[in-house]
Image (cartoon, rainbow, N blue to C red; front, side, top):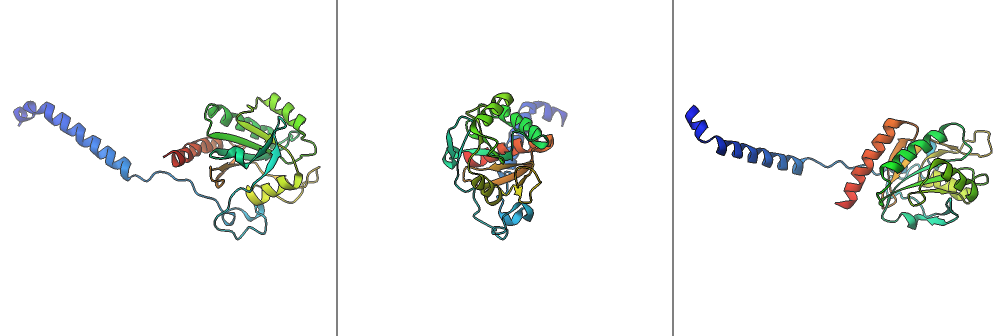
Length: 224
């Protein structure tokens, strides 16, 4: 028996390697690829959803919009055509969660800095305070890359409607300050078809790493 194995040692080794390779290929072919959910209003905490949409179970998309970015350029949904983007809501004078959210968005910016498919979009919830000039000042202070990350301001009602009716990301009950909407720490992952594919805690590092992993999954879905 030992002589047999010695005689055919090379052949058996090659045969075993080929078999393992075939098994590996079959495993990868049969293993289901990870796919992110498509979020509908009915799947989200009702407190974050406009009452007119809480029953909606399909076909939800981010609505069209027209807002100005930190350079005074008008930005619409067309700027994100065929893009994956991460959206959030903030204000430049926020002393609590916003600085943490901005720092974590900077991590995402650095990770995907050279990836033209990935964009970032931050909406101010205090447009009267956060003028174009104020947003530009904030962008320069934080290291925002103009080609990657848009900080936008504009009509208050449009921003609030987007937050409640499109991104499903804010509460309406006021907090006693100059604005009457409580924005959450949510980062919202949006696919090239303007559909919500994930919600993430913008103040939590683990959630940010999960978001970056999910961006890769979403890229694979649309590139393959």
